Image 1 (cartoon, one colour):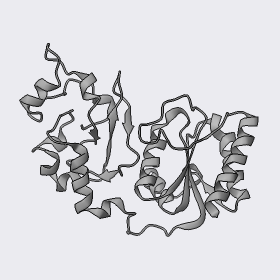
Image 2: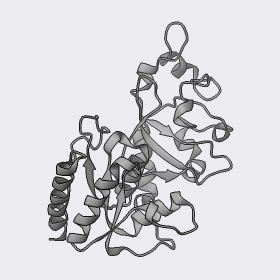
Image 3: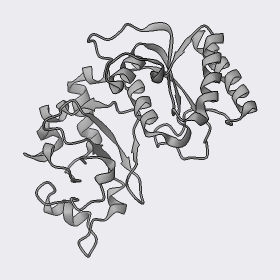
Image 4: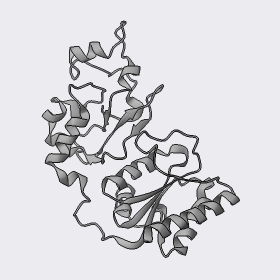
Length: 266
């Protein structure tokens, strides 16, 4: 799978230059059109065209019907750069020209087995980067959440709970360094002791940031004010702090978060 999520239901699905005839027949309807119900059951590699941009992130998950514009991303499979795909084209069945051609292809073999092989032979992909990133601040907590106005008061409750337990909470919009904001988010997660993630409304950036935090071994505290929304498959059994986004609910959020932070300090 390549390209942005909004591209996936376009015409470039199961083209025979990148998908074998056998797989094309297997995942097509009798009329020759792609069978998206079957395709949705396959684990998917989502990455933008990376021929000239090997630094773009690679995500693993399942595309969600009916529109296939949302990737139910695995937060336990770390995000890695497309340079890894460039270095291992045979492992992933990547053919000449695929890295510069947006499409949805089906490859032979088990993706999870391929990833297992990759991570066993490249264990550094599962470890925190050792480059020039800030050392971990034991008193700092990164907060990943929607920036919408409706969550400002919830963030105030989070900040107060962190402060009460001796931590400084930091959200990326509070930083003003003249650097790339995407890199700033990752650096903030790396340099923090813990990460709080508020998945309210299923913000895709928050899920991406949760996956990155898990991938580098950070302990994270998940919150949500929309528990009725179905969580991604690999965090469905995680214990969330659930809150109502009103005054009483935010007071309870502050109390529950304080108790969780107290537990982590023990």
